[in-house]
Length: 83
Length: 320
Image (cartoon, rainbow over all chains, first blue to last red; front, side, top):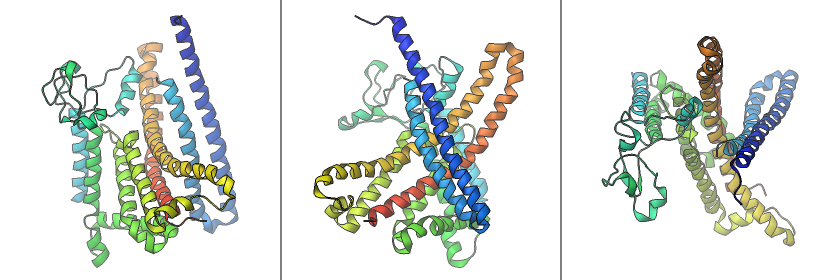
């Protein structure tokens, strides 16, 4: 028996709401991870200011890793939200 | 003088993009704006309606490549067929203008560098890019790979770094399109890294020993499972490279386009006065995100190249 139009539309809206919630959770995860890197980096620079260059370079790389993972999830939510 | 030529290349690419890309119309303002992120085939005249537009440089595809057909619903194609019966064809896309422009910029900026490195004579642009290239060599490639292997792979890393850097930065100019914001371009770049990993590993360790060395020393019953896991890991690493570059570039553009779309959205909510009041906020946020995007463009080129260095080094010299 074919689904009624309202049911189909309601389930599509639920999927899009799920995509929105997912994108929010992704932002929480990325924020947690990058904040830990920031805290550790600042502490290490305070302990040993002459290593600032190395610490800065490595924290940028690590932040990009975490952002890569979060962008996986963003791509998935975009795929849900758009088609 | 060469700086003026570089600016001319960028301006010509943006002008060609604006003149030959088809206009986008979507059902809402946001959809019209987001469609600017999709690659669009170039048409000869973008002022006629969509049904009559003709592709600028269509290329008829032979039978075995017909899966690459672009599904053009516009006007007549290369063979003169009507819209109902298109032969498989592909066409020049607006992204390819900017890829060619990035290659021209690399040639332009680096043309005096070998002479400068030999004799010490060069203008400021040459010195800037010579310093940049030496930074890539001394701080990205040599610390990981050492000078022997690093010298063998250095042309690839230099090319990919500056190619991605110029493509990302050109995408921020108004009227342009970012080739790296399309997953196919980043997939192609990561596939080259994958082929370098596999071929470099197979050449330096022997064709069968490379695949056997992927797995650390484990008891025999565990070996098939771990082999599958390690092969998957080998393929997932370049896949992560493509998604990271693609999502960073297109996500940044999408955020800027969303803020610009809000300027058109507020008049529908609050009337004309409300729209005028809200537009400095929208434009201000968009400018802020653009500033972050310049930084992200450079960081993503750096990350792609650095991870390519690390992966190829791991393939040539596995830790276990």
